[in-house]
Image 1: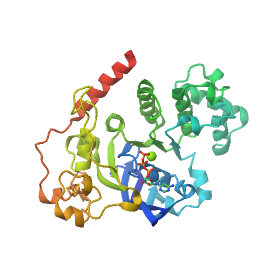
Image 2 (image 1 turned 90 degrees about the vertical axis):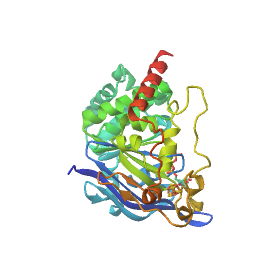
Image 3 (image 1 turned 45 degrees about the vertical axis):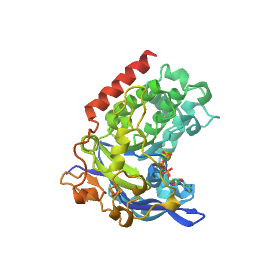
Image 4 (image 1 turned 120 degrees about the vertical axis):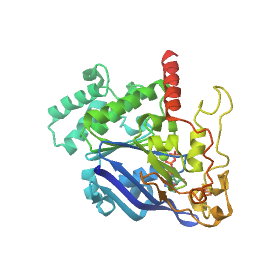
Length: 353
Ligand SMILES: Nc1ncnc2c1ncn2[C@@H]1O[C@H](COP(=O)(O)OP(=O)(O)OP(=O)(O)O)[C@@H](O)[C@H]1O
Ligand code: SF4
Ligand SMILES: [Mg+2]
């Protein structure tokens, strides 16, 4: 069996709200195999970042708390680590890149100094060695004239260039696991494609595993080996990229797939949207948490939470339709090949403009 680098088991986290402690994630489980990419997808507020911040144990500093569960990193439970232990793990074995590259960089230091500092702290390199290594990292993330760029400040660079610097900083210590939280969302479409390609290439080169968070199913189709779909703090479906795109089992996943531009609507035509909105953590509905928005809702859905059921291949979903066999198999679901073609066409167009 493939080796797992990360196993999240029943992770339940909470924040203090006006109504008391509310769960931001509820019994979240997901696995990441060594060398693979797991994408966590879901609309805004579904608990993707809270899950990532929990793995980094940064949730403790964001006013949240891990209520229950395990997060096994190479078999060791991160939940049980002290923040002192985490200082050694974060930035060294596990690193994270965030959505907004500008705010991830310190404006008063040059980018070369910032990468070198990471190497001096975690790899105990001397000043000169760390500087040379940071210039080399800038080269490896595709920054032209890295010797000159290393001496520049973040404000002297474009957003795409800053995200490359952030990636260089995250990879400088050769981490085993890279967590990327919406790494391309703040960038324009041409740069998004370049950064995604860069992440894919570097993952191979550095032999890393990647947990990539995105609200964009198109991005997941491009980079994922497996996809975990989150809704209102829970994983509602998990499977390989083929399973999720070609045999989706949860109505929420199907809604997300139908919302991909161009797959179910003509270009410029009306885009499918899932009706309603994700609930706040203090008002998670009873039964199936997706029931107020689900086009297939049944009586049982309002009362009882559907169990997560796994197929033999490990494709997991939580929906009562699985029990009744009522899922409409005749629907015209998007096919992975279509998604790739759509994205390639968008990319060619973006490169032209
Ligand atoms: N510090 C906090 N205090 C209270 N609630 C919080 C806090 N941080 C997050 N939440 C709540 O937890 C839920 C999950 O948030 P999270 O940031 O993980 O969503 P997300 O899936 O990353 O969304 P997005 O796509 O917008 O980044 C949301 O309802 C959010 O309002
Ligand atoms: S359990 Fe019911 S409400 Fe929930 S997704 Fe399935 S059919 Fe819809
Ligand atoms: Mg987020």
